[in-house]
Length: 82
Image (cartoon, rainbow, N blue to C red):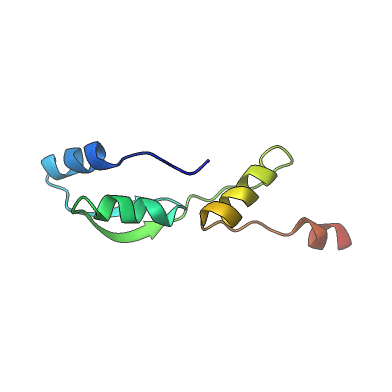
């Protein structure tokens, strides 16, 4: 399911702490849009690096293909050929 979270409260907390320009750890470009919509400036995004395994591979592929997450998922068919 798509991410339906609202980032307003988090953005307000950051602003109250004096943070208006941030670096964000995320693979989800929509989080940047969500936070910038509340007046924060996302200076840089840093990826959350994860290695797929048999239990989470399908989940990560869906996040990448349908939700636009920026993930580096190696192709398993290439590994099998080696």
